[in-house]
Amino acid sequence: MADFTLTSEPPLKGFDQGFGDTRLHAPADLAIVSIALPLGAEDAALKAIKSAFDADLPAPGQSVMGKDDTRLVRLGPDQAFAIFTRATPDAEPHVQSLLNGAAYTTDQTDVWTGLVLDGPLARTALERICPIDLHPDAFAEGAAARTVMEHLGVLILRTGPDAYLLLSASSSAGSFLHAVETSLLNVT
Image (cartoon, rainbow, N blue to C red; front, side):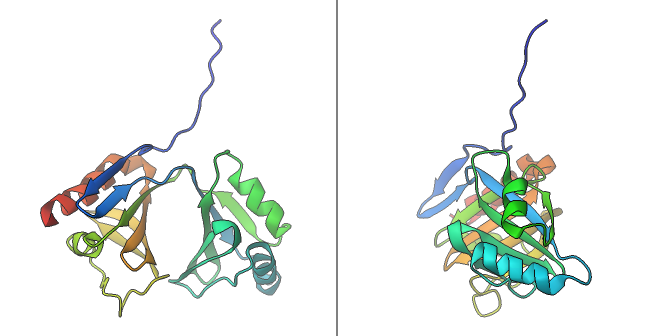
């Protein structure tokens, strides 16, 4: 009998394309772990998060960088994501060990696919397909929002002056890439 090994890979692995001075690429080794605060033990979980990442969990709709380049994204009152680079498939146990069991964690890495859009055309391209106000006065660095782009659910994070991290379901990765890439082509 043949011996097979299955290896998980991000659906957009290796994608990297320039559009003038603007770059669209799939980040390598992106790990996403959800963190849920336990009912009645929220304060202990928040302290554990602060200790583990050297950053307070931000307000809902915001993100913040913690130590080891971990971005904490608050999605709701009791839900957050820890997003970081990790080449090995053990992201959830890593976060769980940092939190010492003070919060519930679930590995979301294979559920989401990510794109980084960075450069002077980023906001212009996103405004064509994203129904939220992305002007810096309304969507400052660190902002995070759930939205839709071309009928696809997307989590959008502003990570820099002209930089965004976009997350969508890995099951529709090709359509997600096509929507963002087409919008970029239309503004170049």
